[in-house]
Length: 247
Image 1: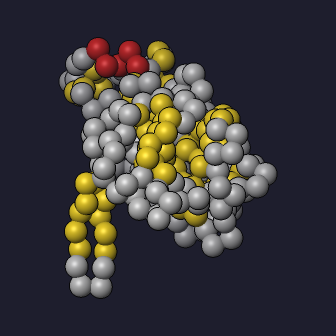
Image 2: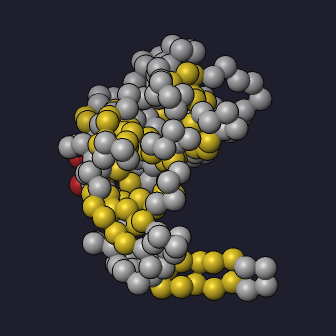
């Protein structure tokens, strides 16, 4: 959207106000920073709305921030402003316009006006890396300031220390909501998802992805109907599938 509007809440009235100055380009995802500014994404570019000296966002001004590192241009991801003043984005259902469930991430430093790539969590439980796919994972800030993300496809959780920017995978119990709808085993004992998704290949440690634009053939194998499958790296075995992209 080329323009933004602000929603204000008062004791007995609510209203939207159109801001006086439009952003330099179309914007999508936005984050409220600890300094009161609002940073918004435009592909790999980012802009910041700084309120006026009186604290007015309606009369605020826009500036252009540093762009994301080359190769990382996500859409639909986990994000949060950290208590240190920095901002973090992790994963992305799409990266550079392609369906990826990427596990890449980056941290923005508003003082230096720089982005630094962030490694994904390291799997410490089980034999497979459940953090090979992060995508649009759920996330929140905990009371102690740590950044918590959940696995999109499994029950795993990990926290990012906002000061050291290091991950710790949590040992948890009672979380039973892994992404399992519409999936089946093929002749090679690998999981496939009829509705689209990415799953660990049984016994192989790989992740098998399917787009939701395919169909099952007479032998129960999933075959693609469009060129979108070229977003995945090729994989062997029955059905049209691919290893989930880590980039």
